[in-house]
Amino acid sequence: MTEQKIEDILKSGFEKITPNVLDSVLKDCKEQSGQAGKIVSIEHRRRKNPALRFAGIAAALVLLVGAFLGFKAWQTNGRVASVISLDVNPSVEIRTNKKEKVLEVIPLNEDGRIIMGGMDFEGSNLDVTVNALVGSMLRNGYLSELANSILISIDNDDPNTAAALEQKLMGMVSGLLGDAKLEGAVLGQVVNKDQTAEDLAKTYGISVGKARLIEVLMAADPKYKAEELSGLTINELNNLYAAHKATGGSGESEPIDSIGKASTRAYIGEEAAAEIALKDAGLDKDAVRIETELDWEDGCMVYDVDLEDGRYEYEYEIDARTGEILSAEKELLDAEDDDDDDHGEQPDMNESMPAPLPSSVKITKDEAKQIALQKAGLTADKVTDARVKLDVEDGKTVYEVEFLSDGFEYEITIDAETGEVLEYEREEHS
Amino acid sequence: MSTAANAVSQADNKTLDALIAAIAEGNMDPLEELYRLTATPVHSFALSILRSRHDAEDVLHDCYLSIVRSAGSYRSHGKPMAWILTIARNLSLSKLRESGREFSLDDENTGGYEAPSDAVDIEEKMLLEACLNQLGDQERQIVTLHLTAGFKHREIASLLELPLSTVLSKYHRALKKLRAMVA
Image 1 (cartoon, rainbow over the protein chains, first blue to last red):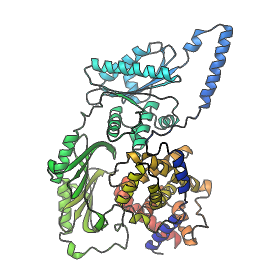
Image 2 (image 1 turned 45 degrees about the vertical axis):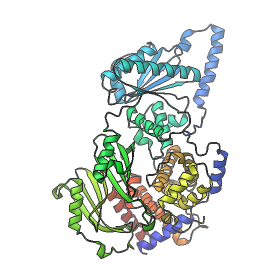
Image 3 (image 1 turned 30 degrees about the vertical axis):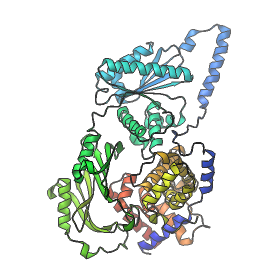
Image 4 (image 1 turned 180 degrees about the horizontal axis):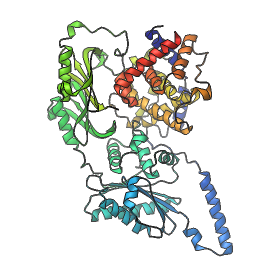
C-alpha cells in the first residue's frame, strides 16, 4: 500500500468515526443561552469538599461541647479561619485564626523561602506579618520598578469577612509600596472553595490565588496553557490580564480587583515594538493600521504587532524584553483568489505536490540560502543542518530555508521569483 | 456524520473567522456550519491524545461549548483552526489529568482503541487502530493533525510546541511504520 493510499484511508476513517454531538451541543447552548456569547470565567463547580463538611460538623460539635464544658478559648484560637496568600514571584501562604493571629506561614516556592528568611511569625498579628513579608520582598528586589505587581488572595468561609480582609490588605500593601517610592500594582481576590483553581494549584505547586488568576486568563484566551503560565511572575500575569481587559475583557464585573498598573519597564514598550516592525517591513507609520498587544508566546513575553497597509498584512512577534524579531509573516490581504490559507492544501508533505513551475524560479538555491542568512544576520559558517527546499505555498513558488544556529532554529521562506523574504521564524531549538 | 469530504481544507480561515465572529454575537446558526467544518479534526485530535472513544466524544462536545463561551474573546490572528484545536488540546489534557492518567491509556489496560465496525470498512478499521494503538503519542497527534486538519508541518510544530524538524521526521517515520504494519 502506498503512503498516499494510507493517508487517504485514514482521512476517510477519521471522518466516519466522528460522532455527531451537534444536537446535544445546541441543546446545552440553549440552556445557558442567558450566558451565550459572554465570557464568564470558567464556571466553578462548587463541589462540597467532604473534608470541609466534616470539619463543619466537627466544629459544631466542638462548639456544643464547649458550651457544655465551658468555652475554651484556645480551641477556636488554634483553628485556621483565613488563608491569605501573597504572590509576587515569591509565594507564601499565611494561615490565621479568627482574631487574625498568625498560626503559620508556609513558603510555596523557593523564592518564598528566601523572603521568609529565618523569621518566625507564629502568634504575630496578620498586619505585622504582611508588613514584614512585603518589606522583605522589597529588600530582596522581588518588588521593584521592573516588577511591581503583587497578588493578595483571601480564603475565608465568610464572604463578608473575606471581602473586608481583601480591602484592608490591598490598601495596606499599596501603602507600603508607596512608602518605598514604588508605584505598585496590587491585585486582590477572594478565592473561596474554587475547585478548579485548587486542582490547578495542586498540579503546579502554586498558590490557589495564583491558580485562579491563571484560570481567569485561560478563560479569556484558551491558547494559554496552565503549565506555562504557572511559571510566570505576577507582574507578567498582571500585564496579560491588563491586555485582555483592554481588548474587550469579559464585560462582566471583573473577577479580580486591581489597584495601579503592572510595570512594563522591563519591556521595550508598544511604541518601540511597533517601530521595530515598521522598520523591518519598510513601512511608514502614517500609512498603516497598527495594532500592538503584549502577549505570552513560545515561552516569552512578546509584543504581537499587526500592520496593515491596505495590500498586505504583516504579523510580527517581537521579544518584549530585547526587541528582537522572533517571527514575521507577510500575507496578501486579498487572499480569496489564490487559495491563500494556512490550512488549505498542504503540498509540502504530500508526494503529490504540484511541481513548481520552472519559469517562476528566478533565483538559485544558493542565493536563497544567502538571502536567508542575511535576514538572520548570520554567515554560513555559523549555521548547521541547513536545508533548502523548493516548494509551492499559497500558489507561489518558494524556497524554504531551514537551519540551526546557536540553539535556535530558523525557518525562512523566500519567494523563488523575487527573492523577497515572505516569512521569518526563529525559535528556540529543543 | 456527513462531513463533506475535505471540508476542512476547503474551509478557509476567513470563513471560520466569520463564523466565530457571528457566534460571538450570540447567533447560534453559524455554530452548525462551524461544527460541520471542524468536528472531524477536533474529534480526531482529541482521540489521538486520549485514545478513548468515550472521552474523545466528551471533549468534542465540550469543545464547542467552550468555543461558544470564548468566541467573544477570540481575536483573529488568521489562525482560527489553531485556536479551536488549542481548546480541544487543553480539554483533552485536563481530561487526562481528571481521570488520573499521566499519559494516554496504554493497550495493556484496555485492549487498545477499537474503531466502531458499523461505521468504517475493514481497511479503515485496520489503519485507524494501527494509527491509534501502535504509534507513539506525538506521532499519532502529528498524523491526525496533518490528515484531518490539513495542518502544515510548521503549524503542527507550533501547536504541539515541537521543533519543526521533529514534526517532519516523526510524520515520515509514522507513515513508514503504518505502511510496514499493513503490508
